[in-house]
Amino acid sequence: MSFLKKYLKGWQFRDTNPALEEGDVIDVFVAESNSADEGHVYIGDTHLIVEGATPDTVEKRVRVRVTEFDETTTTGRGEFLEIVGESSYTS
Figure 1: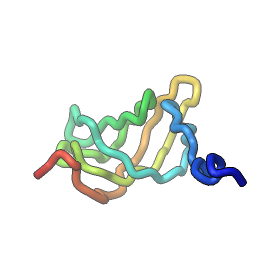
Figure 2: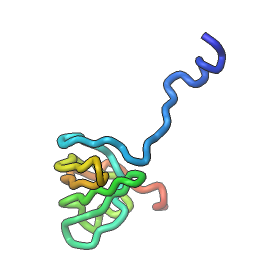
Figure 3: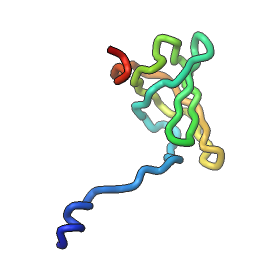
C-alpha cells in the first residue's frame, strides 16, 4: 500500500445533503426555536424541524430521532430525545 493510500484510508467527503431515514437517531445542534415546542436543525443544506426542542435547547447538542424525511427536498421532521452537550460558543 502506498503512503498516500495509507494516509487517506478511511477519509471521505461530507455531503451537504445527508441521507436520513425514518428511525435514524442523530446528534445535532439546534439552530433556532420559533415556538415553545419546535426547533430547527440544519445539516448542510438539509433542514429538520424538531418537535419538543424548546428555546432552552438552542445552541445545544441534542439527540434527535428522525420521524419523516424527504430526500428530494432534503427536509424532514424529528423528535427531540435529550440534550447531549453544550455549544462550543458558550463560556
